[in-house]
Length: 438
Image (tube, rainbow, N blue to C red):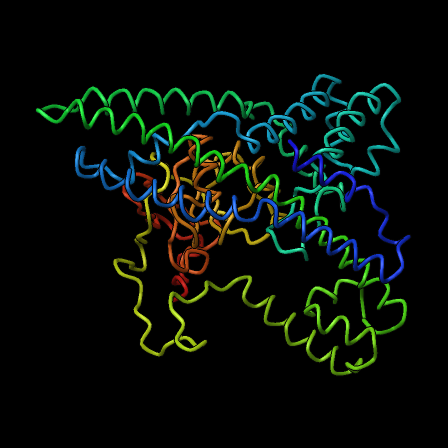
């Protein structure tokens, strides 16, 4: 679209060739472009999608007795999903490897992307490598663990994309578009059942209202998911600028490593550059912030803050026991399987076929893993969370807002997920002698 076209000249800039003033002007141009769609994204995500969800859930609960469960189904299998198309493109690259024969498959499984490029024969490299590079050209801004610029994208580290391609190499990985089509069929059938199930004098009015709400929900839920594809381009461009600033400060021995720049705010970066912020003081701040950042990656944030602090009387989780956890129903279905506790996209190779992923939050770069998941448990988010949306696209049961799930569930535990009721039950502990962490 026009927005992506407008980002292309910015993405073509060689940041290392700019002087400091020109680099700052380039940064301003990026933020200016971001502002052209910022308001639209905010309205879509925080207003329309959320309000539609609340209204529809309430009506479905009142008229059919299944608010969250029905909402999850009638929001699945959406058309024109960037996430589904992206996953399908990665799947197709994996199929090129499979079609080339077992020797190529084994080479891919045991090699990094650089090793594969060096060892594959010319025809394989032309087909697979060509598709791989073509995909990177339009999706290089994707692949981060989350929006934070500290995380590398596929365009920064193609090996991250190669790992996702290899995740699709097994024989039993269904095509993402086929899974999406099945979810779409379930969505249409469920909507039809809801409309036909209305009765009474007000049925025609209710039916007319539901049709409109169903349609608007599909539009804005789709926009909510797709906006990340566009706005991730901004985060990638910002990452490139700040990483270049980090390289320049590192070359002057003002930073220990270029990536340290992500633990300083813009004012501090300028002060370090000008000499008004000492190297020792900057290093101290960076060290404290890095330690805090690494610690919070595995900690769930508190529900409430009072004057910037966690209150001493913060309420405990309601309905949660050592064996049964209560969350929010986000994608219907029931499944029992092995839990895999994952915190980072780079760990996804540990997730096997049929595993239940338990994590803090997911991101678009996690999409290929959904083809082999049997369930998902999230500590954060809600029905509108990206992971929950993906589960509905891939017909995977999901429970979200399960507090301390990554602590209460142990890696390898056998758990039962009920995406319709919003429950997660620990059936068998991986370590029978150890109790779940409180």
